[in-house]
Image (cartoon, rainbow, N blue to C red; front, side, top):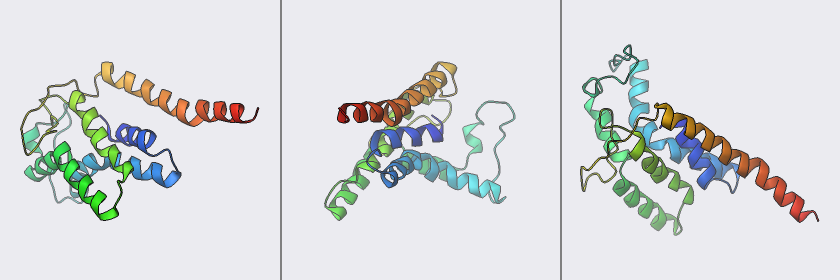
Length: 171
């Protein structure tokens, strides 16, 4: 799934209480990709890391991506790692930070939308290396319903539902 869709899902699912809550949930929705690929992107812009060959129009060969990106991806795309960090934050705050749930939502959406050819989701790492061969999010069968679902969710939660509440409360 693309990083923006992850943020939008995180925001609409777990950040509807307030604007800061929305942006925090949006952040946690993009965090797994931001902390794995974002660092690599910055390093390639700075000329420190070698840019992979994207000219084929497909994903580059995963061997062109540095090992540290694969390691970060494993950790940031693991429900096990998320559970440990979520529990630590809960203990420190003495209450859960619900906006963090954008993170496991990201992982759950990635499981069926990543193929074994390019960064399959290691959702049980480090306990298990099981992965699912899904359909890439760029496939129109995934991409188009994704856009329609996001548009529908935002239309419902930010336009239709508030108007209904106002109409019902105004009687």
